[in-house]
Length: 302
Image (cartoon, rainbow, N blue to C red):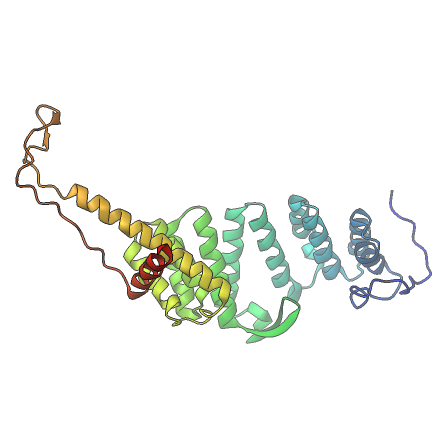
């Protein structure tokens, strides 16, 4: 049953200090939805009020985004997607870009990779047509509660990085690699470099992965000093080192010359003679950072 409307204003007294600056004043359905969401912690009630706000034209864009957020928090992703898709037509044109971002996040959360790829391509098309940020060179964005100016160049690289990640989930590794490289050409950063390293690693192209990783380990790419990224880079370095050592061992065993009696193709079992066999040891080509890691590991073992 839909909650009954009261005409008196909702008092601000008793509002949690953490949310007092987020609760708007007034008595419309959007205000009541925010009180239900933030003050009373009533998610279901908030959804009803947000829907009423949308239908009555009360701050439609904010009501739609907030309702999608509440549905997402309740793990009702499909309902959130349907809400955005059904009601976005009620929002102004300059709200469509941010609604696309909400949809992309929802698609990612519920594994709709194809839909995510199509929407990301659509955003890249808008960039090509000069329509991103409604034709402006920058926009004000928010991250972790802080506002900052985001350029079209930065946004293009970010969208390409998200598109490459989506291709990785398909998995379409060749497409992911191409898009990651394009993103790095536009606005390089350590996070996408490590993702590219993972992509190359997954294709078994370990030497190329090492080269990309070395740029991060040697602080050649913006963001390389961030502790979380460095931990991740060092973890990848150890993985690559282990894989190359494994390849070296495999190469050693597969380097026996044929026809020396180790294996008789005609008889199908081991031969008798092993005289004169030289045990080949393939030396891996490793970047200096891998030598340092090996030495560090040996020291730890002592």
